[in-house]
Length: 249
Ligand code: PGA
Image (cartoon, rainbow, N blue to C red; front, side, top):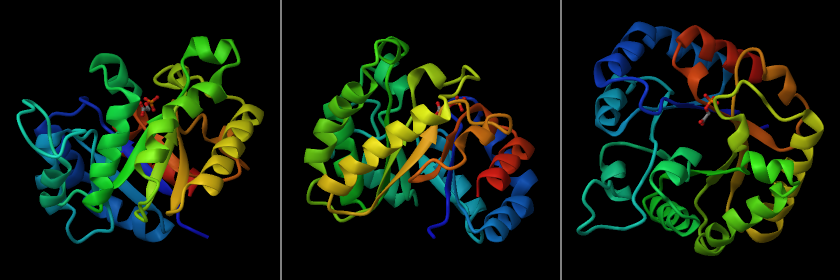
């Protein structure tokens, strides 16, 4: 069985100094956690931290990822960061299409697909976030919303043999403390796995994100194809994150 993936999405919640301090204070515990649980742990700090965090974690099995990547390869795109730069600073994973990027930075499905393709070309595993809004959920339109978010991604990545991860993050579950019911999650995961098994030629896995915490972990038992978790606020505190890894491994 493949080991479970746990991604800590620190968003803009920790400064440079706080991120470095998180790792130095918890270095041996992090090392032990990933080794003993045989899990894949990825910490995603903000851009300026990636290089230093990677150095700090060099002799551990813990990885460092980014929270976003440009849809463009290079050029006059002020404020953007390319997949190649991420590779050069030792980044092996990158979140793309997070709902906060879609909402605040107007990132489109096409941008997400282009960024994911650039990442695969650099052998960085994209963590592609998709999820329905509260309104789509209420109107029973989740499946349609997810399929439409995936349209560009599936065609942009159709020839890639690089591993990709899809993070199903219902927008209404992010930061709310509310998680989908198990039957609902099963339905969504079954549907997404059917899409990827039928259409995608390279390796893929599905993870869940949105209010993952020690308290909600019991909701995620027995979900077929659930390969890990994208954790926001509960990843900011090491003991909380550690409990999630131990419960979900
Ligand atoms: P949350 O965030 O765990 O705080 O709900 C998850 C995310 O935004 O990826």
